[in-house]
Length: 112
Length: 116
Image 1 (cartoon, rainbow over the protein chains, first blue to last red):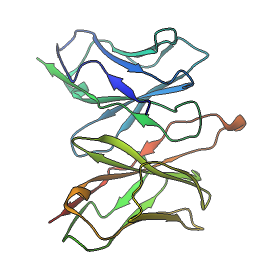
Image 2 (spheres, rainbow over the protein chains, first blue to last red):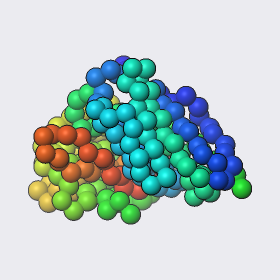
Image 3 (cartoon, rainbow over the protein chains, first blue to last red):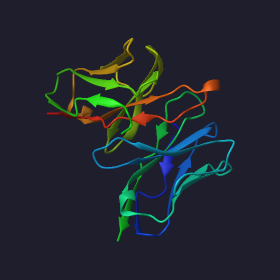
Image 4 (spheres, chains in turn cyan, red):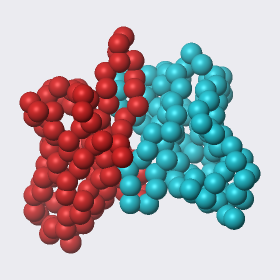
């Protein structure tokens, strides 16, 4: 079936640098996209979402970019901090329903 | 803190047994979702309830069932447990937006099930 996938399983960045986590999706009907952060022993935590009528959305230190032409989603984290170390998941709604389809996740490691 | 409460945090049981996982959604959220997270399968959607009624099914086995009660809490029942059912089980809840638009799912911290 169609699914969401992540380009890189791990990403290591230095503290203070910007991080970019990428995600590809395959369902052209998907119209809602969301990023989650999961720390060890905890559930996924909502970071930011974007609907298909937008191509960019900004939050606090985070920006999500959506390119529907190539079915690509990215999460940019500015001035990455040690507390940002976690696994990041992108998810999409498959164009229908309210449940989300999750990618495999990217592990972000922030080094001092 | 997401406001979604799951109990128990850990559960260890034997093959063939039955267990019940419990979830209390955020105050005001009518939708409850169940997900399974394992190392090799990632986060897999199991089932969605809205205001007591089943709305969507994902990759939920026939040995698994769920329900949402009038007070909106939900239970996930897992029976005839197998070693492969060992995983993290997450509950999430969401609010219903006007126009039927999607809204973020807010996750609890999960129940870790170990089947021995």
